[in-house]
Image (cartoon, rainbow over all chains, first blue to last red; front, side):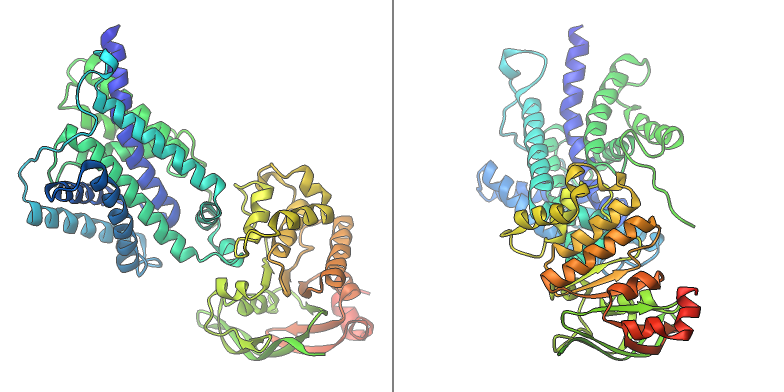
Length: 292
Length: 236
């Protein structure tokens, strides 16, 4: 029984990270109808920036906040330079753009910080949380920060005018322009926020997976699985999907014989395919109907 | 009377196809003008050209300022509210959020009281204010679209076939309210309609458009009495 509780709690902790990545993916998908394959690499680069800041002597939370701001700006720059010009281009051109971005960021990180694995600090420590063996303080911290982030995002989108404008721009762009919203900047803002959310995921998971240019590969696939499971059109679904995938991953690794650590990733992929076949809109998404 | 909107030699294009051919007309401040014409005559295109939602050449002046080379959102910010064909409802948002969006370019002052004013114009919207706008009936959505446009406190309101798909009684109500808005709030209105009879009742000025050209213009009551117009658009 304790093993089960332990695995579920650990699943919720990693699930929090998947939820962040899924949320970042969904935010960009809502804005431009494309999956950002480079979301993980953007998060990895952000994490390296925070590591560099700490190497230069900036304390953890200072580096954390600075990285958030830098990632936000970086996301906007990427949108303005690369994806705004591609806005009317065919899907494949966009996909090529994302893959290029993936490769460029990955190589740049390797070039600047090399490919050796680095330790990444945790501000929460790794002692047992509240004296219980079930979960560590870092895992509790991962959950806590994610929950705070989700509350902040909910308040932003629900109760601020700019949040309302962003939702309007994503749901009916033409009508949004007709009430005077600059939809192009709303998309850029969405990119900035997605990059910042991704950076939080990167910085929280780095103490677990260690810091190196390929650290986010697996995490992003789980993030995609979470987004697909929850529904690509639903930010709420993405978050729920994240936690579900985290729990599912851990339970499968523990209880299904032969899965273990090696087969965990294929399970995420199997999940993506299963959802796409059985319920393509995901748990909370709305089916997209196009007139032909 | 001064012209609030002045259009000269307006051509509009969808790709290679030219939809408007040298359109010229003007709207007097405070007036209601209707643009009549059959399907495909270029009515919607004219409205879309004013808001720079379709490629066009020619001169469009609003209150002395040129609208060419301005983005749609900047044109809206000048005080031109456009109620598009199909209503453009934000279906996943609540009725009240739709109204707030109409005022998104304004400062927060007066938004709450304007929303109350809209509820006074359209009581049904108040009953449904927390409901998702997509669950509203066609007529209710049309009222919401008009209310959303008014939230801008526009000087000019463009309406694209507000009667489309609505029951005759609802259409009558809607036009009554439009007339009231024009008189009380001094909003200049340009309404595109296939329902010529109703549009001519509330309009001061009318233009008839055929295959992208204006073929007739005059006071609304004169146009309504014209033999050709009666036969082609009023059906009697």
